[in-house]
Image (tube, rainbow, N blue to C red; front, side):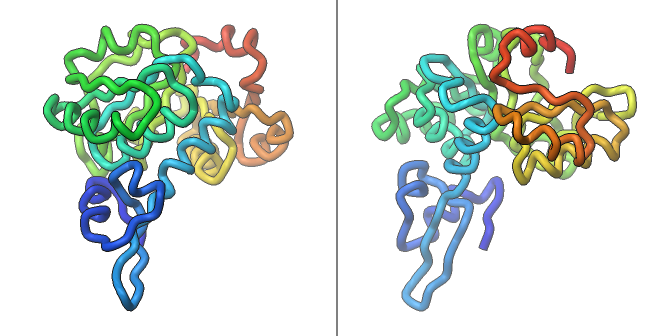
Length: 239
């Protein structure tokens, strides 16, 4: 059974057995039912890590601070993945400061990257030097209000990963919009096609030049190799 937000921590607690990734994150997005009990698994950590490596490169976060919006199961998987990718610090921001602190207390002994729990009111200071923001909240899904925080405080070359299902609708994408899709894998394929359906001008970003033909066939206009730093600098603030 596939489990989505906000039930990933509950799914972990329900199971008698856990795979290594679920044990590390303290959350599960898959439950497997056997005759002798339930096993919890976590594929979010691997999926997020693989997406970042494919999109930005294996060393893109090494030695750099990152931030996460959210304090639930998806945030736990994100913190685990970002630590494994070499982030120098993981800043976890939540509406409830106590929940952010609880996540940090539980995960910090398991991870190599230092974790810091913050409130959403700390966003402007937390955002100043980060390389990546991961939105791991359920905000913007199924009519829920979005996180009302500015993105213009991010460094010019920071990347943003939105884990909610309907970011295109949430951000009001229309034919006058410019959309960037980072990562030309399964979810990237869907994002390219949906953005084109909305009429937006779509730029595909990938660390693999071999993905260009595939991206263009799915609706991308420009294709950007994320290993070309000069090109990335010229695109700052365009989306």
